[in-house]
Amino acid sequence: MTDKEVVIDCRNVVKTYGSFTALNDVSTSIHRGEVVCVVGPSGSGKSTLLRTCNGLETIQGGTIEVLGQHMPGTRKELETIRRRAGMVFQSFNLFDHMSIRENLVLAPITTLGLDRSTADQRAQDSLDRVGIGNQIDKYPNQLSGGQQQRVAIARALMMQPEVMLFDEPTSALDPEMVGEVLDVMRDLAAQGMTMAVVTHEMGFAREVGDRILFMADGQILVDQPPDTFFTIPTDERLTTFLSKVL
Image 1 (cartoon, helix red, strand yellow):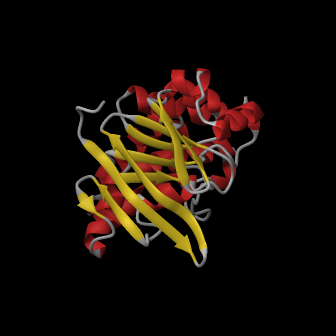
Image 2 (cartoon, one colour):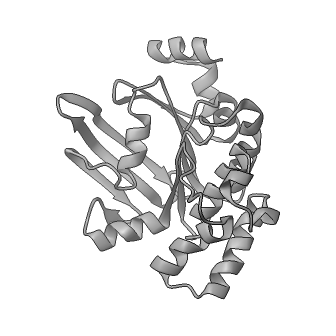
């Protein structure tokens, strides 16, 4: 993948919260069309790394470049990055008082200036893409958790992003609902979407990831393709981690 365009480039990134260092000299790159899964114990900096790539967290050192723009840049540049780099969180963050259709068309109409007819069609297409096109006029509380998370993915797709950032998208779901969300993510990967995925789903990471990053104590300790990552772990911390999650 090294011959492809770098979509996200982190160099010597440092993120602190007071005296606590969440990211300690982190460097990595993600290329167009690549799926990179980020794993590690709780508190290792995984979600923080993802949030810095979308401007949700500021950094105290190093540089981050997303789709050719340096972070954080101006407010307008940051808004551009967030349109081009969609993000899906653990919680669905849907507006309960609005229908699924209204949840989806809100941002494209207000930020992209789409007319209502175009936005409605894009909403239907996005929901069809995640397999719940028939739910467009329901409300969030009428859907299962897995369906709500698929709506959240469809909402991100409404902006026609070039890269998708997933922050543990299945961690808030009941076990029987995890598979339907992972299937949507598999389809996106198969269609060539550039993806960075913080996940505890090791089977998904092994199957879909082009590379897997193992983080601990705010650092990337291992960056390898899945076959090597899972079968020939060379880091003691990784070996201990895998023994607990596999």
